[in-house]
Length: 245
Ligand SMILES: [Ca+2]
Image 1 (cartoon, protein in one colour):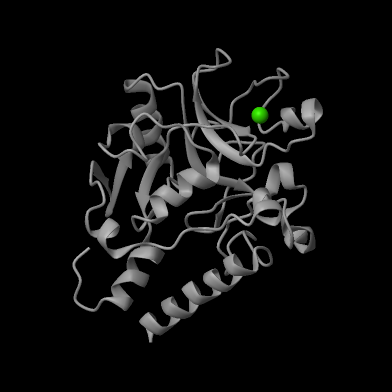
Image 2 (image 1 turned 30 degrees about the vertical axis):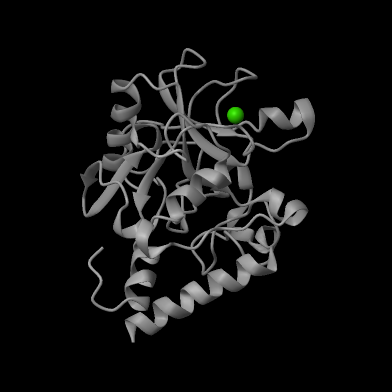
């Protein structure tokens, strides 16, 4: 039964992706959390996992029961030394039964912040996404979206309100400054060229603010951290009984 539900969930994801729009990324409901603005223009879709890439996915470090890797550390032409936009980052992960990292807990966020800090990286993409696309408007619980409209697209879970520290975290992961000087998320690029800052990255002291979350326009190119996706791993398992991922 559980497998059936998972397969159905993935079918919903596929159908939504193939339509190129629709019921996406609405907080924690069934959806694929894509919300890619380019999709309606150019037809870019979320990738499906490939068995061989899932089997050989980089297992660089483990946290909880998930494997993670940093794109630049992998000896692969699509990963090493590349900077990619937000959707491409997700897709390179998704092909491998992973997704861009989502920091749903303080412990996981501490781990990612320490990774960025210790490696002295300027920035990485995460799976963080603003629900500002088709279907989001109908969700009263996501308004105002700058406070309540952010979610982790890898697990389709809502983030805590952006205007105060998440419960029990003890610190505010969103930066208190950005391009316009004010606290994040600030959608600053919209005022410059009408491009929304709908994707979330971790920046390292770009604004003399330490390692912090920032809303960023999704076309910007960055390296990324991938994290195991239970949904995609279980989908591939359901298609390949007995496979050991
Ligand atoms: Ca910003």
